[in-house]
View: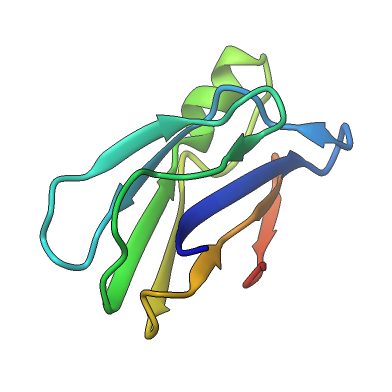
Length: 107
């Protein structure tokens, strides 16, 4: 399976982050793609063909925090990652709290 997916978890509640807008800016200059996380906090596929290079995911955390009555510190989280093998699936998860976040190369 190739492509790109993400999963966003609320580290405070131990629950999925539902309805968070995530925007992918592909490395090839194609138009950005914005998708909201589903009821499980996931975006299983951005619907784009991945190409080699650096790609940018922008998580609109400020809007999500505000909509959920949370006083958050980060208005957005930006993760830049490099695709070397576009045939391989790329999973970029985000563990989120109001004052911290972490990410890793998922599978």
